[in-house]
Structure formats: C-alpha cells, structure tokens
Image (cartoon, rainbow, N blue to C red; front, side):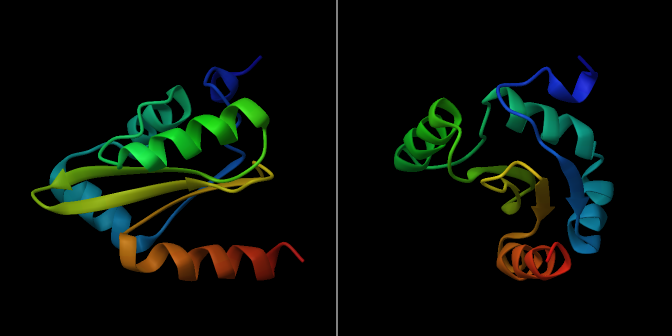
Length: 108
C-alpha cells in the first residue's frame, strides 16, 4: 500500500489550480498536507450537513467528498474528490465547478 492510500478513501490524481497554489504559497501552506487532511476525514470548515454527506460518501463508496480550509484569513481552498475517486481537485471556491467540468471533458 503506498502513502497516498493511507486515508479513508483513495484520492486518485491530485490536481491544483494555479490560483489555489498561489494562495497556498502566500499562506505558507503545503498542498499535500491539505490533501492528507481531506483523505483522513478532517474536512475543515464545512457545515454539519456537508460533513454527514461526506461520511455517507466515504461509507458507501459513492459520491463526492468535499473539504474547505481557511488558509489566508477568510480565503478558503476547496478540495473535492470526484465520485469515482479518479481525481481530487484543489481550487478556490469560485473555480472548483469550472475545474470539475474541465476534468470531466479531459477524461472522456
């Protein structure tokens, strides 16, 4: 078992947007640390309902798993593992949907 499989679920390919990488760099935050927290079930600053949906997705093996981490004041980074666990995306909240769509198109 490799290091990437030590969490509650596999992350697949890790993809980070340029803007998220810039914010993380400015904050002095390590992207792999956030990926590890996400896979371990530390989903950051999400609502209770989202926490329960994540737990259901992990337990059933079906559905997205989403985390949010405050990394620079009020600036948050979102981490989203796709339902098939092929990719885990890290982006700013306003770019996560676009990144999902781009990854969906590139995997077809």
